[in-house]
Length: 425
Ligand SMILES: Nc1ncnc2c1ncn2[C@@H]1O[C@H](COP(=O)(O)OP(=O)(O)OP(=O)(O)O)[C@@H](O)[C@H]1O
Ligand SMILES: [Mg+2]
Image (cartoon, rainbow, N blue to C red; front, top):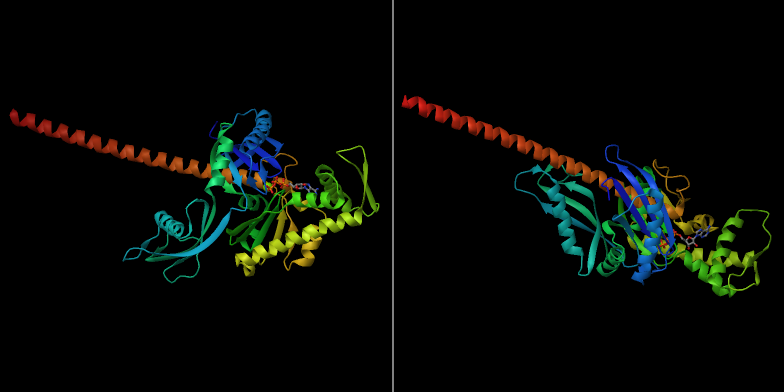
């Protein structure tokens, strides 16, 4: 696979979404060449329960994307979610040398290492390390400390970890179909990348991605992800509530749920709704009021979990901007209204922001994670290509220096030989 191809795979509980794009490392942009979607059957509440089925489902989505792009893929950036995700923050201090000196990248790495030693238990793997609130000596809070002069460095280190077992299962699912992993990214981190505006990331915003099996929560402040958690409840719970209360099959319940969302805003809607049962020839008649009651009860339940999640984070006071909902289930009718009634924050339903290089109709809430993964992939590719170029440049300079030394040495020898011969005659 060409180095200028970036692939993102969002492995959701209900769908697998693959995007293939060409990246331009000079301009730091991308152009989507193909995408593919397939139903996902190997996950439950965001956790892998059947690796073989998951591999088959990923392969179906990959094949569609490959066909559209005319590109065969071998490596990908992939999203991870699930209840096993843990977010922890610790304040780390680092004494530099006796005399003040310039803070370098290696000091940043030492800070992270200290935090990892303190927080990460066996069986856990670090997915992201986010360092913020830097202080050098007695300075006020800094956005970045590298390049500053000092003898004492302090910062908050936010580590996002996942269960090693779950990560191995994810790797195996892809290995089964001969795809390697470039990097694993936390799903709400990816969603935030595509949905939140710069000012939302700056001023304290909660991103809530309600998918099929999970509700992913991330808190952004001063352009940094300061907290993340995963609630194992999502759109499938609305569907199973409807199926249980109305005593109908899941497929019909799923259709009813989506139809209700379409009808919600239409004032001419009848009081009852008729749908064909997927399992029999019967027609099912449902009172819209009943449907509304079932859906609202689950919306309230999810909102309660979100409130609890914010409280648990300890960052409630940081959320000066509000909450942005995204993900397929953010389309559920009544969510925005109910959230505005129950939560003491500004509420917005967010879709991926206009980004050059996407194809038409991609900016949907259910694509937030996939598009965010692609943005992350483009950034990483750009960063690595810059690093590669810098290293190449360094090597070139080194070689030039070596050549210069060699020429000088040769000249010295020549000079010595000349002197030697002239002393003979
Ligand atoms: N118009 C709609 N109204 C209500 N729900 C909808 C609508 N469209 C899609 N959904 C729901 O969105 C969910 C899928 O969303 P999404 O694609 O974001 O989930 P996922 O990424 O597969 O799952 P997860 O992120 O939880 O692992 C499904 O439960 C689906 O029923
Ligand atoms: Mg998802």
